[in-house]
Length: 381
Image 1 (cartoon, rainbow, N blue to C red):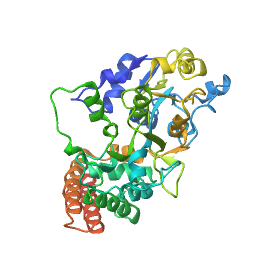
Image 2 (image 1 turned 90 degrees about the horizontal axis):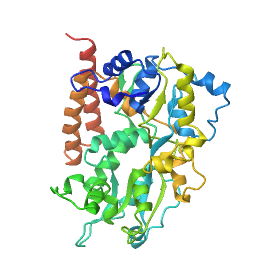
Image 3 (image 1 turned 180 degrees about the vertical axis):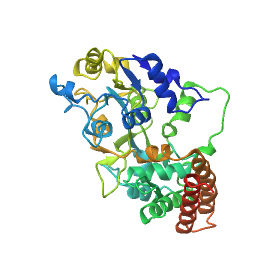
């Protein structure tokens, strides 16, 4: 078994280096990330596991549905399995929310509802600045919009007809929510964090997870924060918090993008010892090994929900379907178009945030610039 991370070279094409590594090492089992898995699956470089699973009556019913959904292709093939994942959820500062007279949410919220609640936490004159909402993409509002749109079931690029679709009412709503949030100084701004050369353990944790500072009402963050909060109750016992499922949309309440996998085990096409490889994959992703995972990977969540988990951990297992169109869409674009996207997104996001241009007009101009760049890249001259 090899990990393809060891073979990635900055001077090589990112995806070609994967196939080069497999051809050179000829492994029987791969440990790959979700991005690598999608690429290798699309190029038929992985063996479907279905016939082994059927032969051995391998139980996939116990694996959280969103994981199976994200690993399974349209033909129903599973080309890999993962024993662990990183989830996402909405963390709530109960004390802050209650002080604003807002009922503490106890179940899933839509992104529109999250922004509405965040807007009720206005800047005040307190010595410690308060914020309504934090997301891990706050440093880049454009990527924040793509992340939220993806989690709401939106697509910014149609791979079928090769057209950008960001100039649409759904996207306008997402971008408007973000613009309003930053305009009202309710969204947490990562640029406000002062950098320090040396930090204590607590300072480092707060820098990684700003919700821990106690001045953010709502935070969409990953399950590593949950693990930290539950394992460090003595250090954060002043923080009154709870957690609910990651925001989705009213139209697709069980579809989101709050799951990430960095260790997917797969068997490459042409593996010399495929049957033996399956035995290893079956063990790593099975029930017996699953019981050892809390000791082996304490920061990850088991793909098979543990019966002895804290009740709050259930929020990470609520999704049935995954929407991965953001990464898949970006990966399919030529480098020249990605460079253009970086340029125009910075330009037009600034126009929107500074209120120099309405959101609708900015998205229209952005889509036109991106489509022109894509058309020129496929039809030069």
